[in-house]
Image (tube, rainbow, N blue to C red; front, side, top):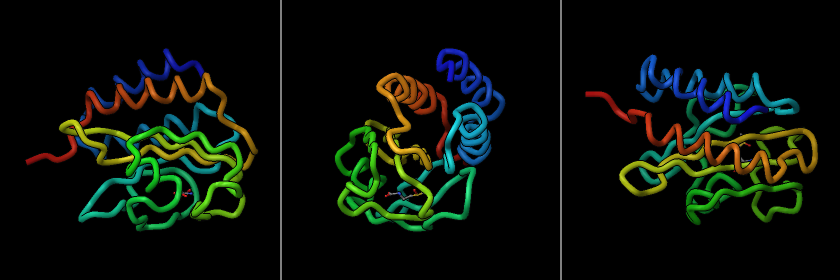
Length: 152
Ligand code: SME
């Protein structure tokens, strides 16, 4: 994936309408379409004290994830990007799709605190390189900067 190009495309998607439902829907499609070897790409949003599935591409997924649980909940709680080369070795990994073998999760911030995560799953072990992790963190920054989480 050419992350510079796709960060530009992400800015265009957000500029078209920053409302989080519209923007995150097209952003999940951008990621799924641009990165090879993914079986799920999308977002979980913090709502009433737990993560709830948001816009995504892939098979139907777990709806609720407690903060601190699974890769997504751990990433949000620790406020840290997690690159998991083998999900079977991550204590508490939540298997929404048994085909998933590696996973990358990046927290997204609003008002200075983590309140959503971007989650990417792959059927390939060790799918996400250091370059992917760095590129996806840049993409997350573009998303955080532009998104409107709620609209009056
Ligand atoms: N595997 C994740 C759950 C979400 S699905 O992968 C879409 C986790 O452990 O948090």
